[in-house]
Picture 1 (cartoon, helix red, strand yellow):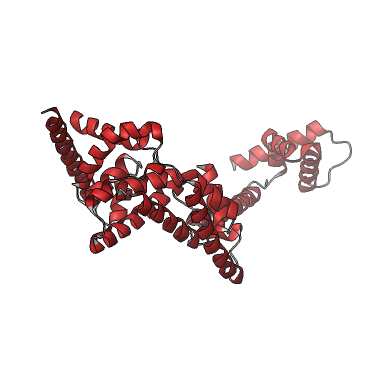
Picture 2 (cartoon, rainbow over the protein chains, first blue to last red):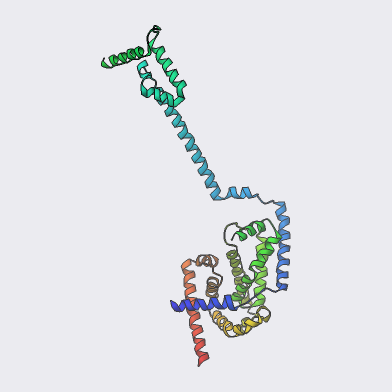
Length: 159
Length: 184
C-alpha cells in the first residue's frame, strides 16, 4: 500500500511540478482564431433561434418545479385548515349561545364577552338578558333582578 | 467555482470574452494533460485546438451544472484517444520520435530534471495499455474521480479502479527494474 502511494506521489510530482508545459503565443493565436470563427458561425445560428431567458431556464429546472409544487400544496393545505377553523369557531359560537338570562349574566359568559368585544359586548349581553327576562317595574333594583333570575335558574335546575 | 459558473452562463450566450477567459485559465493544464497522454507536443497542440473548437460549437447547449475543468479534461481525453487510435492505425511515427518532447515547450531550467526523470516515466508509461495510462494520468494528475473516468471510458467504476491499480503496479515494476539496471 505504501509502495503504491509512493509511486502515485512520484508520478504526480513529475507531472505537476517537473513537467512545465506552456502554450506559446502562436498556439494561443491559432486556437483563439479557430474558436472565434466557430463562435461567429454559431452566433448566426443562435440569432435565428434565440436563447431562452434566465427565468425560463430556472423554471425548467427540476428543483424549481418541485419548489413550486410544494408551495402550491402548502398553500392549499393552509387554506383548508383556515376554512375548517372558521367553521369550528362558528359552531362554537352557535353552541355557546346562552339559553337563559341567568346564563347570560354569569361571570364566565360576561368575562368571555369582555374578551370578545370589551365593555360594549358586556352591555349588549346585559341588554339581551333584560330582554329575555321581560319587562320589570322601574323600582326593581339590579340586586333584586339578579336574585330573581338566579332563583329561577336554581329552580330550573331542581326540576 | 462561482467564476466558472458565471463564465459558463456568459459562454452559453456566445460571449467571446468568456471563451478567452476559459482558454487562458485552463490552456496550460489541458496542454499538459494532452502531452502526458500522447507524449507528443505537436499532437497535443492539435488536441487542444480541436477541443476548444468543439467546445465552442457546444455554446448554447452546454449544461449549466457540473465542473467546467472536469468537462474540458474529459474533452481533451476523448480527443487524445481519437488521435492515439488514428496514430496507431497509420503508424507513421516511430517510438523514438514519439518519446521526444519539443524543447520550446519545456522551460530551460527544468529540462535537466526532465532529462533524467521524465523520459524514464514516459518510457514506463508507454509500456502500459492506453486505457491504463489514461486512467493513471487522469486520476493521478488531473484529479478526476473513478466515477468520472468510468463514464469517460464507458466502463464500470470497479474496472476503472482495477485499471488504475494494475497500471500503478506495472509502473512500479518497470521503474524499479530501470533503476536497478542503471545501478548495475
